[in-house]
Length: 194
Length: 114
Length: 206
Image 1 (spheres, rainbow over the protein chains, first blue to last red):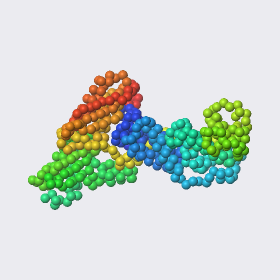
Image 2: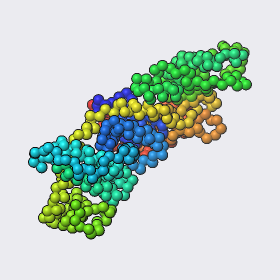
Image 3: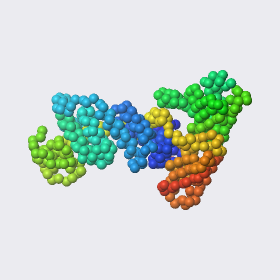
Image 4: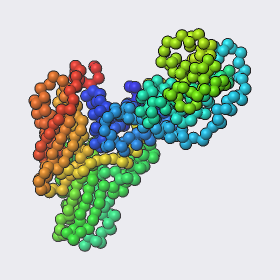
């Protein structure tokens, strides 16, 4: 991260100041403290948003708006969660809204009609191939916003069901149900392709 | 007497006086400047072309002018001394324009230290 | 695909579960597999094994997908930070104006600006980290003075009363010499004790 420092974020004089202190300062109107938090948390949040939305450009927009929303809400932030967890939740919900607003793509049933690709390698290799990943990407676009979000947080981000439930504001059962449906859709899509 | 001096010109005048005071980094950037910075990216930071008269408000009153000044000051100087120098400079400037009139009332607020 | 018509018996997954030909709900088979639960039936049952293999193959594709996303190390947060801060500066929260100098001089400094300078003053004391810093005009008519409440993290092992006194002195010095603000009272609260790494004030290890 050494190369990522910019004049926008003042250097942390005298060592690294922890998030909790910076959060309190930012809540009291210290925008320099907020700049340090933005700089520090942006990479992880961009990765999260890119995984959820699929494209870096949309991820940048979502994270930028999430930070702005956080700045506005900071005076009411009680500090029950860490700044990182709080931002994770804000970014997740913003991405969820972006996904909900997308035009629905072809329903999953259409995946059954996908003709088998011209593959001759053994089945074990197929799943590892680039085509399987491409197929997976396309199948992800056919999931509902909630299914996709829960699945991405679980499978790509490695979060616990408890954490996901908290982040998206659903019960753990509801999260499990969505991850299950997502997996079923995705295994079918890959199976149809095979 | 002061009514004969065009208001905008006077504001520009006072802005120049304030910016000439040692310890004043710049007048508080107006919304226009900050919007420009937000939309045109990092190229246009604060100080990239002074927006006209941001940070100065001039109101005529029965007892003479009330001047409200908002500045960003240099942290190398003692802040209260900078604000006093601003007040004195503005009062002196307005007194020279209308000798014999009541002294202007000057409010100085520091909105940033750099 | 579903050959069983029994209602799903797994309450964890609502409504749309499906049962394998062996009678097991698919959700349970996958759930057990995810939890690494030992299950002799699963190892022996061809339907369950097939269901698990499909999930396994999905996992393989997921690994490939994960690798397509760039890591966090490669991301330069500078441009995004600048954009965010440009927008933040349109919505600053400077707090209220606080008096400078003698009473009724009509000279002011915004609370957030003064607070930043006073936090920095507190942090000149070794190992001290400043958090909340609230300023308010002192009680009484036009005293021109300000009361201050400062929360700090103190290094573990420091004598707290002495430490608080040093912080108070630094804060008063800065308020007087650098700002020119009259401070009526300084209330210091130690909200946390932190282990001070050796050579803390040097910042990152030399």
